[in-house]
Image 1 (tube, one colour):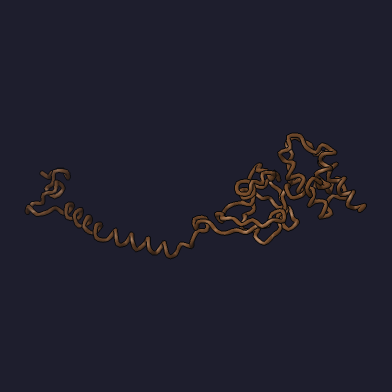
Image 2 (cartoon, rainbow, N blue to C red; image 1 turned 90 degrees about the vertical axis):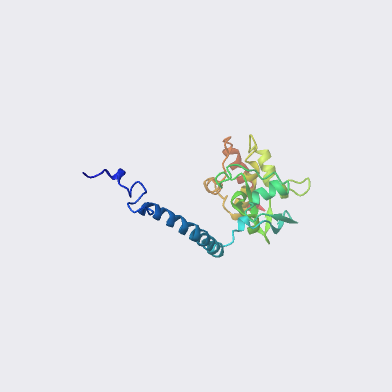
Length: 217
C-alpha cells in the first residue's frame, strides 16, 4: 500500500538513509547563497545607479540669484526651484503681486519682465537674472501714480481689489503692445486676467482711456 505524499519520509524531512532531505538541502543552500550574494549585488547596483543618475537641481541646495527689481539690484540665496512670485512675496516683501491660482490661469501675479507680461507663479527666479523686472510697486514715481493706476481709480476698475495689481500690470503692457486700440481687441488681450468680482466694464474703460491718451500723445 502506498503512503500519502505528506507521510513520505522525504516529504517529512527525513530521507530513508537518515541524511538531509532534498527539500532541507535546497533551503539551506539557498540561504547560504542569499547571504553570500545579495549584499554585494545590491551594493554594486546602488553604486551604478548613483553614478548614472544626474544631479537633481532641486536637491542641490541654494544658489546665488541676482535680480533687478524696480530699478534696484537684489542679491539673494534661493533654491533653484523658487518661483519669481514667491521670491517677490516671501523674500523681498513685495506683496503687491498676488498669489491667486498659482497655476498661471488667473493673472493675479502678472509682472513685467523686460516690458513683457509674465505670470510670476510660472517663472523661476533664476530665469529672470539679468532682466528688468517691474512690479506694481515700481509703477508710481513717488507720489505720482502711473496713468493706468489713475484710470483704474477714476473708473472704479476694482471691487475686492485682489486681482487689481495684475490687471494694472497687464493693462500697461497691453497698451504698450498696441493691443488696446478697440474694445474687442483690449478684451481679447486682457483675457488672461480674471476678475471674479466682474468689474470687466470698468477695467476695459480704464485700459481704453490710457490707450487713447497715448495715441494722442
